Structures are given as C-alpha cells and as structure tokens.
Length: 338
Ligand code: ADP
Ligand code: MG
Image 1 (cartoon, rainbow, N blue to C red):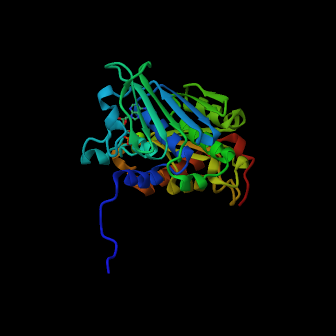
Image 2: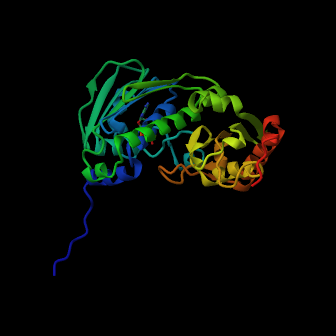
Image 3: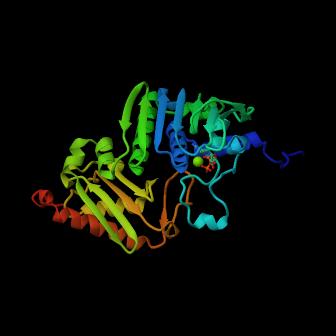
C-alpha cells in the first residue's frame, strides 16, 4: 500500500499556520503593530480601524523607521532587529522579538508597509496572502505606516470564526486603550469607524483619566512605592466600584501589557478586606523592575510573564494595595465585609 509520504510543508502554508497563532483576530494584529511602533520609540501613534478591523487597520508612527534596504527582511519570518543573541532572550526590553508579526499578517491579509528611516528616503513594500511585492519609492516623514486590508481574506476559515464587526471593534478599542495605558508618555489617537479619540502624552494619572474616565480618576487612590528594585505605580478604584469581571484590572510590567493571573490575583487580594468576594477591582498598576528578573518569553500572544521571585512581587502588590486602601480616608468608611 502506498500511504502518504513525509515531506516539508510549503513555506507559504507554514506562514499561514504560524499566522493563526499570532493573529487570532483584528485586535491581535493591532496589538502587534502598535507594539512595533512602541519598540521603534514612537512618540505618537495613530490607529485607524474600519469594520472591526477586517476591512482596514492602519497604524502610523513617528518612530525610527525601517531602512529601505531592510524592508524586504522585515516582512520575512524570524527576521527581527530586536533580539541579537540568545543572551538577549533573558533581558528583553522590546515588545516584539520573534519576527513573526509582519510575515504572519502578510500571510493572511493585504499588508503594506511604508517607512522612512532617518538615514534615507521613504519606501514601501506589500505582502498579499504571502506574496511579497517589490520595494518601491514612497513619500513619508520619518516613521512607519502599516496598513492591513482584508484581514483573513487568505484564510476564509478564520474569517468565519470572527465575531460581529461590533464586537471586533470593541476588542480593537480595548486593545488600543490597554496599550495607551501601558505607555502614558506616548500620544495615541484611535479612529474607529470614523470616530476619533485622543490620548495626549502625559503622566500615568492623566492617561488613566483619559482612558478610564474622570469619574474613576477623581476617586482613584494613588500608589507609588519602590521596594527591592521593584517600583509600583498604581491608581486604585474605590472598593465600592468593583466589577463582576476582571476586565478593568489593568497591569503592566515594564510598560508591557500583561494579562497575568498572578498579578490579577495579587491585585484582587489587595482589596480582599474591603471588597465583596465576587468583585474585581477597577485598577491600574504599572510594575517596573530589572528586565533580567522577569521572563516575557512565555507565549507569543497570551501576555503571561514569569517573575524570578513571584512570591516577592505578589507580596509587594498585595501589601501596597492593602496599605494604600487602608490609608485612604474615603475607603475606611466604605469597608464592605466579605
Ligand atoms: P518583531 O517585532 O518581533 O521584531 P515584526 O514582524 O513585528 O517582528 O517586525 C519585524 C521587524 O520590522 C522589526 O524587528 C523591526 O525591525 C521592523 N519594524 C516593524 N514595524 C516597525 C515600525 N513600526 N517601526 C520600525 N521598525 C519596524
Ligand atoms: Mg513585532
């Protein structure tokens, strides 16, 4: 009998498979592109999305740009300007480092990158369903604009699994807001289906106000401590403003968006004495520590982190929140028994 024989997968197919892991939905493409802009040192990032991001995603930045001679490499798998050697893996400062985002997006959508590096003129490149087009001259100020059209046109099965435009839009909005919270010093605009929101560069407190609303910011309790090389800056919503889900518990490690169980649980534990047991805090926490003490190379998209000393970090968060809440005069009288 002649069974199937073992052979190497076609490169384009490999890219499509990999793309499924990196780009689950429009919001994940937005996240990758904004992270690239942040990695490029952008001071201003403009995000545009239409039809939940399936018709169009555009991310424009004023970062350092890509050299014309490197444009072609930038859209290839495992090509990155960020991770130089294995030693670099243990102290990652940038958001990206796998060189997967652009090729993955290019494998499943119509991607165009227009960029100008300080060293030269602007140029553009396109990738459509994995087909890389020629590098062409373009016009642009220093920085990069990445446009993604017809996301998942090349993988119809994936397209079918997307939710309504409305819920994809809301995921895009949530993603941009999280990223905006992660980097208060960077100006963001988000134009979603023609509606524009601005987040001017400012302090963490100002950004929390712009993203989470004046009501939250006016009531929030500030926290800013440093212990054993770990700095915590937090804005803590009142225990009475707790929510049924943890969606509004925001945490950032070295300005990276994380959705880490340990941190979320620690933040909740900090509220334990003053908040009903079924509630989650509305709170923002920026955690800064030596990048060598935290591993971010856990999963491409899940945003987990591993601390070298997880118990210490957890303890620090719990104690800091507990103390801040206890010291805040407004909360003492609002203690809820759980
Ligand atoms: P990674 O971010 O993991 O390096 P990407 O596929 O996201 O991989 O990007 C590949 C490379 O393209 C980056 O390493 C970087 O050199 C370049 N690049 C992508 N986006 C930008 C941008 N907005 N500004 C400057 N360079 C960029
Ligand atoms: Mg990247």
